[in-house]
Image 1: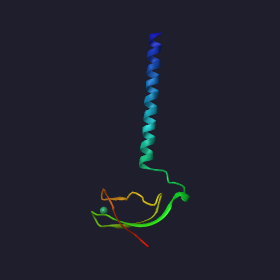
Image 2: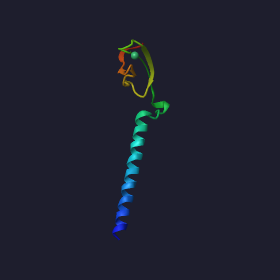
Image 3: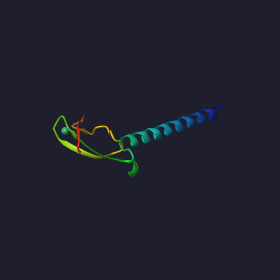
Image 4: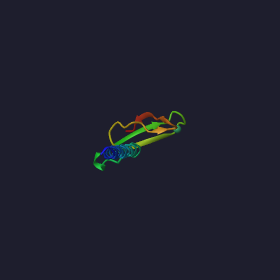
Amino acid sequence: MFGTIIWFLVGVALLLLIWRTGIGMLKSMTSTLPPPPPAGEMRRINVRYRCGVCGVELRMVMAPDQDPPPPRHCLEDMDFVAPIE
Ligand SMILES: [Zn+2]
């Protein structure tokens, strides 16, 4: 009887462990690779960013919202330059 309870608890603990590992893996996957939103929800923007470290500039033309977080370059957030008319 006592042994049965122990094995039951071990089983529950294992299930919880597997469940939490699965959730953690799902979270890490979604944080590193967010699913692209449907095309209809993308906004056409036209902004420039400059890397403050190496000076490279890039133009962003599509984003999930009007004010997207700046991209990163040289491990730093890029500086917002100006919207292009
Ligand atoms: Zn850079």
